[in-house]
Image (cartoon, rainbow, N blue to C red; front, top):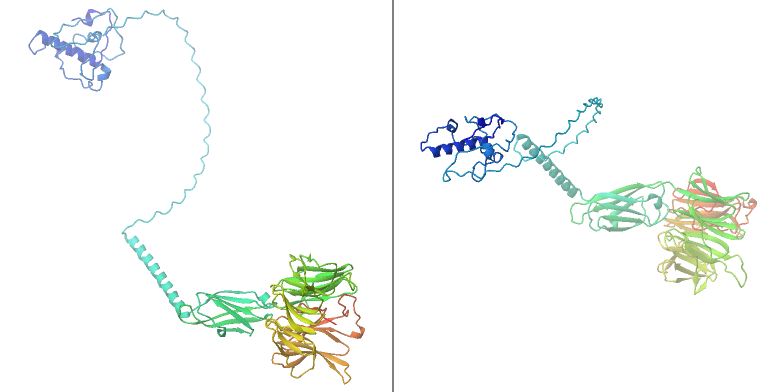
Length: 628
């Protein structure tokens, strides 16, 4: 066996553990082949053949075949171990020279067949030594960069409050107390709800909402107060409803609602109480009285004041006359009328009349289209129908051409064209006319004396109501007109069915009235007192109630003249127009000629007391302009 001692010129080659183990196993095998004795003659073979503790983990590293655990070691590696079998110190591996060979003892092929030796690769020719390059001077170390100042840390955002976790079911004492408290609260709520239900059942129906417009209620008839109950009600009869102060009404009740419609306007500055007695729920139960109260505002009126030396003015004032405010002015204002929201004004100009519509404060003025170029007079309005009516005559008028005193109606909005009233297919010349309050119907008398009724809201046409000489007035809310027939009798005419009854004389009887103005609760009658020769010696306005009792309201002597008397919408007040000192009071030159100096006296119809006398005429309470 050749060893490394025979080649002292070779440096010691360290071997791996696998190579050492393979060498030991080869020596042991050789010794066993030479001697049958199990003893080992070579000191290096005395090492046990058990696997090294590193054997399993370094099999692949040491060249061991994973399939047989047989070490695969090159012959050069086998000779790397010394004769004494000592393990060399582990160092960097340097391959032996190509000329060096190691001989191993021959083994029987039956005992051990080593793998074919791996032929060492041919040694490469040594390359020419390269000239050593001068060592590069070491680069000076870069100066350490100054550390950047640390950025101030941003303040941490406050953590969002965590949502409270849903309480888990637990049997802890605190949870049991919570459940007990919750149960107690729910029990109390149930008891309160049941108690309220019992109270509701024991108290009966109650009012939950009231709807009413007090301002509209004092200016027009047909306003409503609507009561809404907390439950559907059994049928309500009119006998169960009372209004204090008393006022006529109609009833419309269904479900939870009770509608009370006042057929006449209400008094101003008055508190009204509405009660519904014995109201019962639709499902039965105890009865209850439903009651509500509301107050109406104080009245205001509009008056026209003509000024021969300047502009005419329409002004608005309270009933004291201390808060008068002008709302419209023009050179010549012939007439005007007021609705609950608008004013209609007839302005006289050289080329003819203009008809203006505006808000009650004089703003938003607009002109209505006329049937032609001409003159307008006798303006009236239908607040409920939204219409204006007037008498119209063409400026160019002759015996054969032009229209004279035709009745025209049109919408206050100006959305439609003016409509000329016809009778028998021809335009009718109208002597006197009036709107029926709270409707779109017109009552008129033509130049032939025919009394007719036409309703603009229907296509029923003209309804003939006989012959008459004048229309005194039409009662609000009753559809009843006071007209004078050709024989001089004064009747109350029912416009719905055409029936009529004579107008009862007053007590005491003040004689035949020149004008009769109806109002809710009675009439105002303008009478003239005469001497034995039939000459007028005085005039008076008599208040006559529905029972016929008469009370003088205003009286003047022969030096003054009463031009008009009309009542406020509810019949609470009266406005009487007086021309004082008639002999020294010249007439103006307007289409509607009147004395230049006119006074309107406001009176309380309930007491007969005069409230104030104001300069002007044509009070907005009146349906028509004064006639002289």
